[in-house]
Image 1 (cartoon, rainbow, N blue to C red):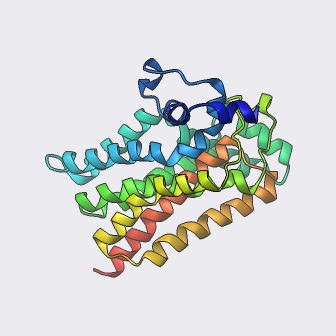
Image 2: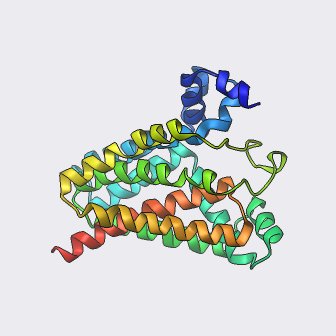
Length: 264
């Protein structure tokens, strides 16, 4: 199976990632081999250029003719349409499973796989979206536009490390997408950095924000979530990846928002 993946073309793997992580009709243009879907995480930050870029464009241009809160809500709606709320679904399942499953690994996994949303999921999504909107509307449009591109791709790059740090919590047949991501090597890790870091580097250069804090705090958030997931279920799931991605991304925005507030 590993040989089959390695024999697939590089652009097929990128195409698979774009198809897997967005609802844009890339599949109409090209259908990559099934094996490529095991490598989609290796190009996950690249999809952040699409989702974060779309959000940024909507924030900037909509804010020229509409109040900033309306522009931000339109930007969030745009990303939800592009992704089909894929990561938000994972976040809701994550809150439901880890909130309602206690320390029972089987129960947590069972709840997370259930398509129904529970109280923890609803409350988690509400507070997440409120914090997302609040942080974005607190900034000038051009600032927020670049920040969402940086935060989106950076959080996906960081969250990708989960599949190196722990095994998949289910077997392939039990996976929602019927796919288990392969662990990537050093060169693929470099590729992830090249996809995820440039927008963040540009944002830091543009704003002059303290880069150590901006990198360190989201990394700590990621590590604490990793410890929680490992302690509870001893492995990751697709829902965990989506939830960690959104929470790490939110931590980026909270750091930037706090920095702006303290420098008023």
